[in-house]
Image (cartoon, rainbow over all chains, first blue to last red; front, side):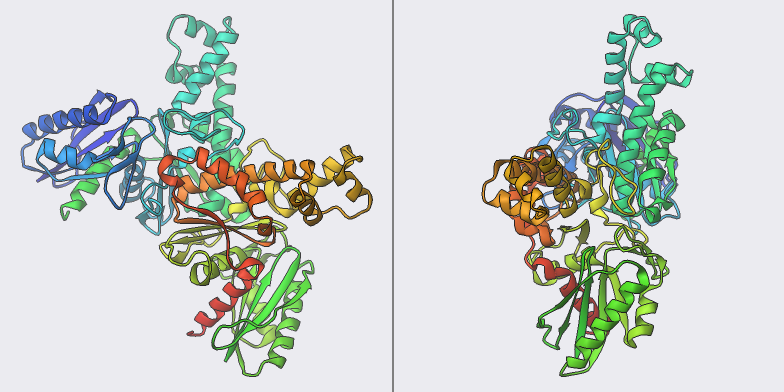
Length: 313
Length: 313
């Protein structure tokens, strides 16, 4: 008996099957279409494809969405990136795939996966930030996923580290959100702004070739380009401001950085850790700040775990 | 049978007895001395005085401290305002008063009191900020006080709303903490800075008379003085930045503002609410932002409740 885990990101959807032993198969990855029903149809097609190739019956589907889900109604309440708003995603998907569907916020599921199988094992209290197109937040409190009073909490990407800072993106009306300072989108914006003002630099050259984005800029930083490095360092320091506030708030056992951008590793985590260890209240400096273990698959793994547990393991 | 509740603030200590019906007697208030043992001796003297006047035996003492308390060791781990550091405050106090002593962070106890008897009744998830000399934080999650992984969390006064902002005070090494932007200390600092730069204003005149502090400046704002009002409004807006982050993180049912400064009421809460309702993610705007109900006594009431429950109610 298998389950299918689906992770819907701001940029791509990844779906994979997990057999009775919960070992993952190679995921299928497609670009994220825009709009609630377009996403549901894309997921349904992925599920049908994976189920048809499965050696045993698929029993349930778990889906992580970059959205907050109302704990009372089960409906998607809000999503900064997908255009879903007060939308019965679980109902629409169950109708489309004919299987039980379990839904949660993508970063909550990444936190669940890290806590059960990854860098959060052996820790009762885990803070996770997933850095990608946006920034998601996942919280484990006393071994359980914490979703806030009515399921809309743990939106840690939307805590403000700069109250007079730039407006956030998509459906978030806040200013100076950590998502606006340290996501892939933010890094890409800062790289491009610098490149346009300084065309003679390596960043400027890459931009002139139409090849500058957060990944290529990060690669330059990794090679030691001082301009790219300065931009990544500043983003990491803003991450450290958020990590400090989260430490003072949750006094966690470990603070994990996941998502696609986490492969920047110490380029981002080094400056973040410097700020955190300087600024957190002394007793709340105890949590190590580490890269999450499950990489970009964490959300999909958590979705499969949720589906597995949802139908009784 | 009675219990005694003691609330140690950055500026004053308040202690009061509660009888079997938990009705409070008039509290005794003294200035807070500096240093761990000086505070313990002051509390012991207050307890002895109140116990001697009690018509029935005093069974336990509850104490709220502006400090984080290690959940494993029971020792005070850190205090921004009192100079306590890795200090067995409960042991020292039990030795001094000969009664069972229960200890918690002052704002945690204020949150407990508001949840049981005040503006947090009928709500499972409560965020409380106590605005006084500093800013304390109290969290109720699913009806229980949340203290963070090892007891040092919920230090909501030390979340940063301005990563490049001014250094925080006392034992906090952070920058742009909400305590640095919106506490009584912060308001007093801003009033004085304005008064020194503008001696011909009402604030400047008050300062020349040696009578300018957070309270007298607030009184001017209440009378409509535009300079004082602008300073209070800015502080309230920073409060709103913090409230927005807390809403996005906890998705609470209610957000309460307590502490001595909360009697500024809508002067502070109005601008804070404007920012919060503009900037929080749409689903997390649901919590009303209100003044707490128990006023400056909340910490003492919570301390008495904790002692009452600690010896079996």
